[in-house]
Length: 252
Image (cartoon, rainbow, N blue to C red; front, side, top):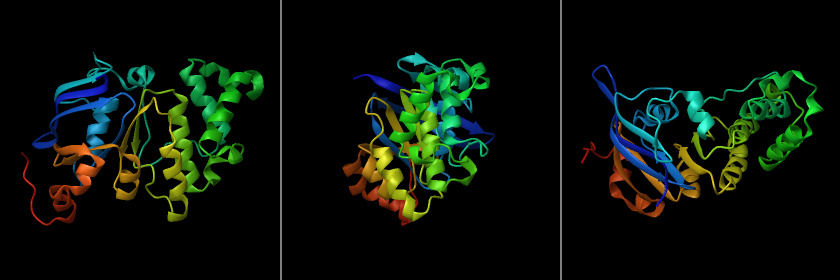
């Protein structure tokens, strides 16, 4: 089996605190995987190491078989790793169309093209429009980003990540803060993301997790507690104990 991402004994310490505890993890190409765990489990710290925001204390990160442990954020993004954030990173004064065009120009190493007239490269404009349509926000492509409902802002953030044409996309709580009335749209869009892109969803909403994920890993206190198919995780009494706090969970 081909693995798009692999970690080997990944560990991150902050002083005496072990935030990531010897995590070995494998993700097949095209996976639909969820990373779950209670608050403070170390999910975001783990993802920050995958994307280069944090350097691990020890261990390795491999992307398509290549050791990327010491690569910069930009080099990883260029290689095909993209992510969204719990709190969006959008430019409020731009439009969705301008935002996606800027992301495509960045991918094509043509950032200077931003200063050319908007329609000067029709292929980029067409690609941006098609991507916004796929994310169901083509109807607001010319609106000010800061004026969009929060659910549409979250969809725009996914569009910006997809503009990089990633091989691996890490979605960090894409429905966080989104009103219930808008969550279904995000569920539908995530379910229809390109099949060739390996997706990792970091999420607290179990409805979203079990609708999306084929496989699930559970982190507890920075360590990989268990993993398996969505059905196996749903039936595992240890996972219910972790979330319900019925007893202290011991690793092993």
